[in-house]
Structure formats: structure tokens, C-alpha cells
Length: 190
Image (cartoon, rainbow, N blue to C red; front, side):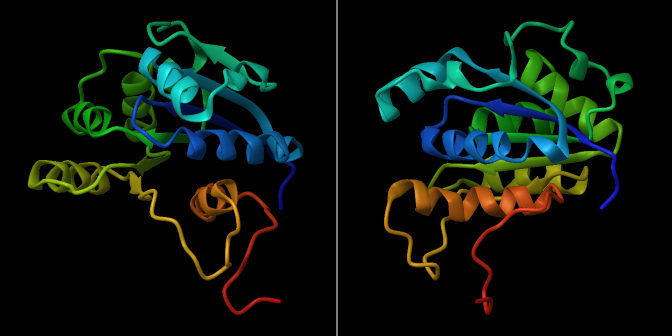
């Protein structure tokens, strides 16, 4: 592995599934030796859903730089800042639609637009079911533009015992997609 550290953006939308965002941020905070910086942007709905689903506001306790949803002066609003990865977790269908349509009306969608135009890695952890043909077509559009759809579909073969362990089966895949070295359950491993 090279000594080059990654700059990463994490966007949290108001889709149900705050536990995925929590577990992802927990994992990233343990991988800081591989990461130069983590910029986080949360929608107002994301904060409300987190508080409702997780019964806390612990998102304020992470060692990352948080940006307001309308802060277009955030470094990752421009490709020149060289953020190489962006994860939207969980990703609402509305956010997916705006990204697919190139509508940069907030920092999340602007950053996603930048990552795509710079041919960098955009990972969307979609969290909705069932999905409509509109959602499928939006997923197709962003995939053709270079994004990766990584649905919040947990795996069970590791025999997770808690909600966090279950969510980690998804976020570990995201960590792998970013290319980070991470200890996690591997099929066929010991």
C-alpha cells in the first residue's frame, strides 16, 4: 500500500437507516492512518432521522470536519481539492434522483457531481424498498456515469448478533470499495 492518504466525503441523507451512517463513521474513525481527511455533510432530515432512530445526537462526537448542507465553499465542492472518494450513506431516492439529473442544489449533490465529473469514486448506499422503475433508471444513469450502487442489503452469513453487526456487513463492503485495509468477515476465510 502506498503512503498516499485518501481524502473522503461522507454525505448522510434523511433516508431511514442512520445506523449505517453511524457504523460507517465508526469504522472510518478507526482507519485514520489510511485517511488524510474526512469531510461530512448531513442534511437536516438526516440529523432528525438519526435522533429518532438512534435516540442520540452522537454524530457530533466524530473527529471529522462537518459542513453545512449549503456550504459551497467546502473544499470538496471543487475538483481541485482532490477528494478521491464520496460515500452517500444512507442515500435517499430523492438524493439519487438529483445526482442522476445533475441537479447540484446542495453540498451533497454538488460534491457528487464533482466526484463524477472528475472520474473519482462515488458510492451510493441506497436504502429504500421496494424500488420503482424511476429509481432503477436513476441507478442505471449514475452507474453509467461511474457511480457504484451498494444497496443497504445486509448479509447474514457472518451470523451477526446485533443491529450494528448487521449494518457492518454493508459498511464493510463500502470500506472495501474504497480500497481501505479493513478487518472484516470474509467468505471462506478463517
